[in-house]
Each structure stands twice: as structure tokens, then as C-alpha cells.
Image 1 (cartoon, rainbow, N blue to C red):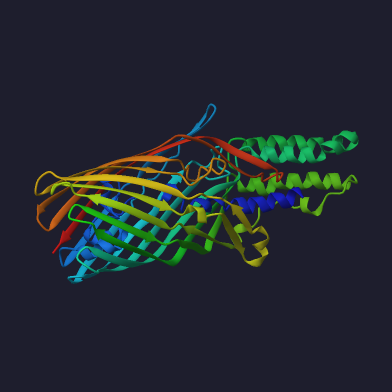
Image 2: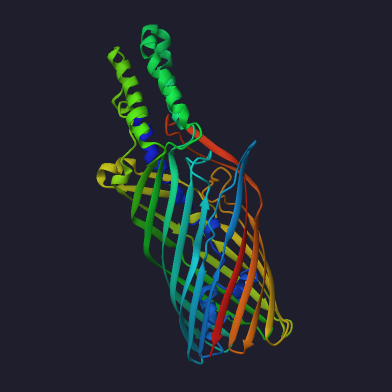
Length: 491
């Protein structure tokens, strides 16, 4: 029935922003300022403590007893949605992913260390009352990875390494339960239900006409505003994965490397839910009671109303909690490094991202009285690849300069494109430098410019009012600027 569909979709669709917790737009390239300047290559490079992220096998090639490294980036992203003459730009808060590494040489052929990185993190704020508010208003994500690592140099040219990934984080997001114009759609939906009856029974039409006219007038106030919204906030508990790799020096000029980061299932066990309204008193004490009164009038006139249509109310989601689980994908990295001279380092690699594991999203509500709103949403992601190249030139004994580029494929299909993260193929250009005022100390800078290839796409869901399929789509574009600064010390 209409009322049952309305309440069920209100609850279920409020959860869909979770589908983009780990999307391509959230996989942050900010685990090293040095490597950010080289297109984020590193699987076939000997990076000291920073190898723990790129390829744990590289840690065994540490030249010093102790290597410490830390840094932070600022991600400044801009986007735009257009649909005909309609244009909306998100107002995004900059995110600040960071990293810390500590590596220790235990024996000549054995090293260990621990790292803290932020592999996922971003924010997107489209505004409370834009046309896509029923899909997302704002969303913010932070994810952290703590990784103890050990690395063994089997021979002078071959090494292996492994790390235990302990990932955790949090998410906060908001979306409209009743978006701009949807109150009018509710009234129109009711009229569609009763249209044939009213046409055949003028006496009933005359009876309820004053109520209908007032209802349409009152609902028009929300033509450009979200009448009701939901805010979701949850912490993802620690989940375990692993990072393994191998590195081999073919000769003094050529090195190859391969690494694998396992899939980790992020899980929010008890997320908090809160509701907000443009005018709570008007919605609860005026509009929804008018709908109920309209139905009662029709019923009193002798027209049976299904039980599912008699209770038009917003589900009490804020009286419960939610749980959700979704995969952070596995990553295969294969690369090669070439040193034509003592001053040049050239490196390239391909990263295979296992987004194909993300087929759907399961949402569960608690307590059991809310479990009737549980759902499974199909996502049907596809595997993707990232191609990276980078170069480093030792300009002097104390100054290194870097250039890089990468191409990042989107895992999202055209008919699953959602504004929570407007996923698209991206191209990044990077540059950076390191200055060593004294031999053990390196001060690093990098700057990245990432541009999306503008993309048309749509996302289909169920109407909150009628349960009919609906589609929201248009043209998306996005770009980002990312300055980074880091410092490392070896002794």
C-alpha cells in the first residue's frame, strides 16, 4: 500500500549514502609526500620506512638503523552538477589525511616497523535543499590504518615483507527523507489513487475538495525545501587485513616489485540516527494529519481504505540504531623501477583495485521493531585499474625534484552514478621536491592536481511516495588540489 511503501522507502533510502564509504573518490593518495610528487608510485622502490604502505618488502633495504617519517596533506575538492539550466556546486570542507612511519633495522637482513595512514577520507556537502537532497545532502568519512610490519631480505637482491592492517574509522552523513517538492508529490500521489473514485462520485469530490485545496497550498511551502532529513553517524570498529609484497633487483639499474593489500570489510555495528525538519510542528501537527483526515473522510463516505494507507508518519528511526557492512577493496600492485644514472630514478606501476567484490549493501535496523525496514541495495561495482608513472632527479646533493602522473578508472557504472561521490575517470599531475639541510633530515613538499573527465550518469531508486521507480541524473564534474608537506629523519 501507499503508506507502507512510503514509510519503508523513507527508512531504506535514508541509508544509501553508505554505498560510497569506500568508493574510488575516497581512496586517498596521501601516504607519502615524496611519492605524492611522483604520481604515488612506490611498489618497486626502496623507500625506507615508507615502504610499509607501498611494498613491505622494501623495508628490509633500509640503509639506517632507524627511519622516522611523518606528513600531512590538504585535499581541496570542487565539483559541479548540471541538469539543463540547473547548476549546483558542493561546498566542501578540506580534508587532511596524514601519515606516520617508524622503521627499525634489526639485523642486516631483517627490519620491522609500524605505520599509521589514512587510506580513505573525504567530504562532500551539496546543501540541504538542492534537487538531489533525497540522495545526499552531505557526507564525511575518515578511515585509519595501523600496520605493524616485518621485512626479510632473503638474498642481497630479493626481499619479502608482510604487515597486519588494523583499519578503523567513522562516517557522518545526511540526506532528505522528504526532499524539495516531494510534499507536492505526496498530494499528487494521493489524488492519483482517488482520481477514478472521485470522477465517479462527485458527492465525495465535493466533500473532500476543501481539504485537498488546503493540503496542496500548505505543501507548496516545501517546493524548494527539504521537509524532513536524517543524519547518520557511526564508528567502524577495528577490522583486520594484511599487506604483503616481494621485491627483486634484476641488476643495478632495474628493480621489480609486487604487493597485495587484502580486502577489509568495514562494519558499523551501532550507528546513531537523528532526524531534523524544516518545520517539525507544521509537518507533524498539520500536513500529515491533513493526509490522515483526507483518508478518514473518504473512508467515512463508504470507500474502504487499506490499513497500510492509514498511518502516514515518519518512521521513528531516531529511536533505534543501524548496522551496515561493506568491503574496502583489495589492491594488487605491480611495478618496475629504472635508474639510468645515479641522479635519475624512473618508475611505473599498475594498481588493480578489486571493486568487483562490491555487489550490494545490506542495511539492518535495531531494535527488532524497526527490522521491517531492513534492505539490500544492489551496487554492482566493477574492478578498476590505476596507472602511475613518476620520475625523481637529484638536482644537487641536498635537493631532489620529482614529477608524476596517474590515470584512475572509475568502478561505477553510468546507471549507478550517485552524487554522494560523483565517481568518474580521473587524471592527476604531480610535482614535488625534497631538501636536506643536514644529511639525516629531509623536508618534503608535493602538489597534486586531479581533474575528472566530466561524466553523464544517473541513479535510480524508489519514490518515497508511490513506490514507483524514479531516476535522478545529469552531468557531473570534479577536480581537486592537494598540497602536501612531510619530514623524515634517519639515524
